[in-house]
Length: 99
Image (spheres, rainbow, N blue to C red):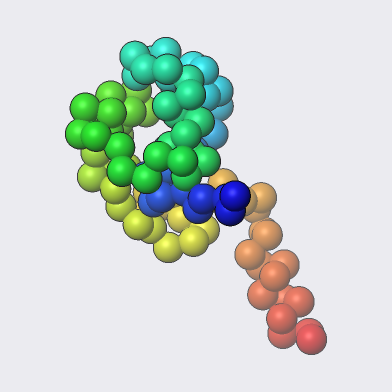
C-alpha cells in the first residue's frame, strides 16, 4: 500500500506541535481527542478533518483555523522564518557563490 502524503493541515499541525515542543499525545489531550487522530492527520491517513477537529487543534495550538489551513512557502512557519541556526542561510549563499 502506498504511503499517503500529509495534507496542508497535517503538515501545519506537525510543524506547529513540534515548534511548541509538544508530543502528539500532549496535543491530543489538549485538543480533547485520541492520539491516533493526531497521528492519522500528521501521517496523511486523514486528509479532510472536520470543522470541530480543526477548531480543537487550533485552540490547543494557540492559532486560528485559518492558520492551520494556510499553505506557506517552504522554510516558513505561519509566515515567519523557520527555526534555522543563525547564519545557515548565509553559509548556503556563500557556497553557491563559490561553486
